[in-house]
Length: 421
Image (cartoon, rainbow, N blue to C red; front, top):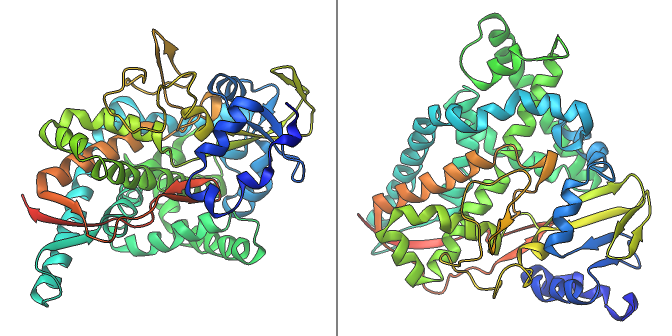
């Protein structure tokens, strides 16, 4: 079957954004390595091939992000490769994994408690005003979009009173990565404003370092040299954004999936130890990030197809996570599936004994540095919500539709009703 038998329009428009999986299945089955005839981007959609692409750092590079990311953030991890990436990743990675993460568990729990109080109080005020007869909230607006950013701000030891400012900067940075010149300009301006805001905090930590993440950046060295103040502020800008978007969408998707699968939600409500595997299945079934783009540095061979140097490749996370060759009935959300590896995510992935890991955090050198923080926020946050409220249900007539844009996929609102626990 030739490539021109696949209609590229299947990868565009409202239908694809609402449900990309049928089109990705056709590509997997008929054209696992396929070039878009107009945009010239290559798509790789089978699990095995996507994994191979993530792990082939000689042929596929992330430097394609350099112009867009550096314009907004300055030099960042997402746009680096080789020794530069490894050295600078090593500075911050320990803060997001293992024992150091345990020290931040109280921070996560404090943020969760504060946010729960916030949305229950808001709902109580609405009750008094007579608009509703039960407590309710939009879980996306009052919880999932706020928790990850608030946690990062606290890890940086920046003022909690400035949380609202961070919630302005965060989406503005993200919008600035788009090709739209107006949004790019706003992103650059917001980052300049954020750098001005950070300046006195960085200077203070240089003089009087503490146990926070900014202090760690101030004390870090690369090849015996300290990071510049600009480097430090660029790292913080990236952490604010990278620490927020994927996590907030993952939390929203987790709750949407559970509430639309009441038997599984009841199982999780009865046994909170199942939250971990519910999160893992969420990252497989509805990963927030649809794929990652790489620049081909040298001719890349895959399934008898030569992808020439200079090409751009989309490694489809959604395609790989829904590959029937790896996961049975992949469109079905099932926290009890026996073909999904439930253990800790690994940079090189996992596939043996009939089980495979999801690749929602990517793989290889650019494996999400905050993966364990994201999992912890989602699991701890979900547990604390379940402990605080009961009889949770989606508000009648308000069940949102899962959708996507710019490579991301999530619900943008999730209005729930609940009773106090």
